[in-house]
View 1 (tube, rainbow, N blue to C red):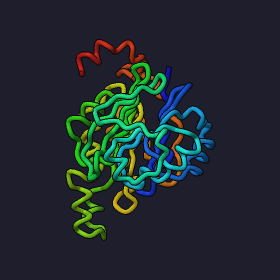
View 2 (view 1 turned 30 degrees about the vertical axis):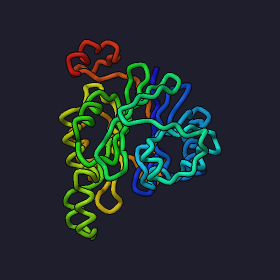
View 3 (view 1 turned 45 degrees about the horizontal axis):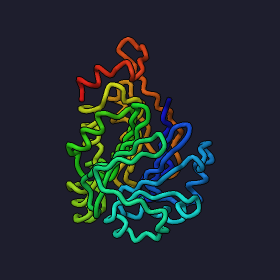
View 4 (view 1 turned 60 degrees about the vertical axis):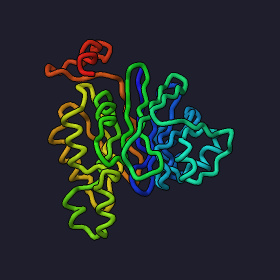
Length: 278
């Protein structure tokens, strides 16, 4: 009774995240080509036939570039808000469009996909969690601040894709023009390494087993730098830096945690603890 997750690509050159169980899966965004999505899934041993839908966070090109072809070829419904659909200018067969509003839940087989609003400079941006049998995975990228919605959903996750876009010093000393620096670190831009680490340290659940640091800037971050930062405070959480060039491994999220005595407990045993936390 596990969820399986992978980053197919993560960065300003394209974002696509896979979350599924043994029977069905969803993609969060599809910002790389259909062909590259298929290739990367094939290398990971993931079947495109298990994918039941694509969910769209917002209309920026690095999140939607592959959607039209991927949806048409594999007849995948695309869950997208009306404003995002309009802003992205996507050409999708009407029969495949599933419009929804933020703060909405969608059932895909035995998966429950929950949307909630986020702070980003887009028409109607949202983040998602995907749940299966009390196991919850969050996909949290392109977020300007760690708002109450993000804190609430992150604190309930057994695994998460979390944006760590830029290092403050690298951005400040880099060659970006002032207006772009201001946009990135503004409340509707991106989350810094420091902001992501503060969220992780302060609000992670005791059962957060995997954290995939996502959407790293090519020019204003360094994978080794952010890996080192999170390794210093990770505890029992496995830290993975998602690449902008290749797919990650597939990670199995089974709802177990390590206690101080290193004994594994199933999440079902922690329902009393969860109630007190949330």
